[in-house]
Length: 277
Image (cartoon, rainbow, N blue to C red):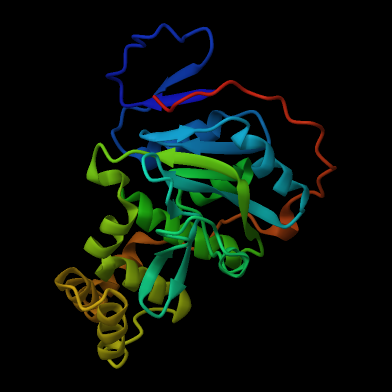
């Protein structure tokens, strides 16, 4: 287990014999993940960011999905620790959102919805190590949801599949707003929509679709003021187009065709319940 940090963590629980602490010298979660991936020895990397809690045997169902040669990333089901309602099981683009959390607010993930997953939220995800390493230079920024969106599109373009592991369950508590995925998406919908347009349209989709996006997002949110603001942000996505273009690099992502054929996995060792530091 590798635990990257910004240099201020002093191991108060005396876990040095169990985990490898890495001083990344940065508060950027993306940089910390990148450095941990570079040091990882196994073929697969499981990312668990602060505030996410693993449940018993949560890795088994997720790692089993990598028996599929084209599976590059696996998504666990993340639930609210109090209500047990789903926060997300990955994301996909919808008419009302550039990055809609799959299963949000539901008790179970619908099979049809799971089949439409486009990417994982990086803060709770499983990856082929070499794929994650290759993605680390593709996004120049610090926002983990923006990175999740970019990584998802680039993973698909490289021929990989993203799969939901419905029996891999994690939970999240809301001590800080950074863990509220739905809120963060609405607050950053302009840049997220511009990022989606960059990959889907080769740049800005133009202003012509803006009014339609405003209407669909506002209606999907029940005409609440917050949904209206989110819709306005989507409508004005072209304003962020140039900045997004400068923050994304599409070359160098590991292609599924460049990945050697893998053998069926042996049984996975069961690990004790552990919470991210």
